[in-house]
Length: 493
Image (cartoon, rainbow, N blue to C red):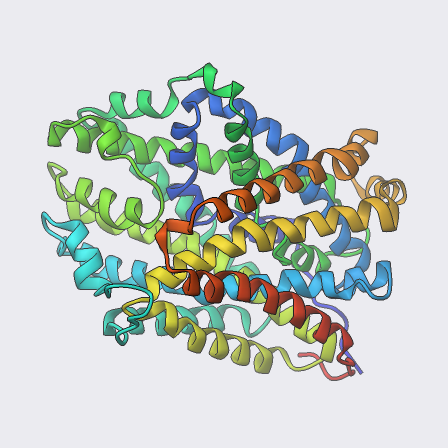
């Protein structure tokens, strides 16, 4: 007979875990650049509109689903209506795909943490990243083996993740009380160092100067909704799983507001560290800051290391702080994604936690070797693009349709209000049934239009089919297969 469901040791532990999941690498290497490229300070207007009209309503939905149904996403949707279990598996499988390459980014971070002590990239951070660390091949068809530094970093990542979650959320609760506050403190150190550097003011002006004309461009609003949706860890099964470990009478709305605002506040705060440093880099390089600003891996592993190497003193210390920050941000997000998969398997078949955790970590590690190869960066870029632009967006759309038109927003809202400190009104129904579906639908259509207009990043068609469309199709097919596989009871430990 199955043991009683695990429980968080208290509300603070749940909130720390949820915030840790939401606050990840994207907060430090994506949000600041997205803000700059879409109106600077003016971008905060559509950003917070998106937070209030889509981010928080969806967070309330997922928290409410987990608290009410007391199970992983597939359990929750099957309780709404038999035959909808596949929607839950869809989110779990998308999360699994993400962990296979997210762990590789952590492997890069381990390498850079090690090299930070000696600033091994010297004056050529770009060459160091692509030639020394990644040993990047000539294209998608050339995998070319695995650099040993990345291999050992990947192995270390999975050992750490396994040790954190194999004993359950009791250990997770202890870990997040350290790993969630830690990056905030480290970012604060980077902010203080950044704003005291020459040229920092130019960088912050570049980041925050409002261009209100941008608010008339639809793409700016779509960018805001996209950033909110993906930065809150929505549609990945995580928030449903984490909230399912709360008692059934637990608060929903207040927790959703706290998590959402903590995530967005961290993104905004991190921008001060990034752009003050970029302002300094532009100052010492004698170029316009627009020539050094960027987003994604290039920002974290090329641009910022270049700036760190030019610091007047204690450069190695701040290099260590920066990459320790990235690791602290990444690990909470990664093990939360793994936890979603582990809980889903346990809820379906009742297997032991330690066994399921080991298998999930092992399989993800083996698949991740593809992304760790010398051609792995190309495949990581392709898979991440499709999962984010089509997989997660479509899952979010499916969630609001199920709650809005199958379960019904009114009874769902009544349950939420019955357990919550902050009551939500009819506005939430409107968001879930009208605004969010329209936004996500428009985002999907816009993405598809761009996809067929031009090959993504110039990659060959065969690679885009294999790493993009094929994975999306496989996830959907496997979701239906897993729904049809009969679950069985078993001992849960």
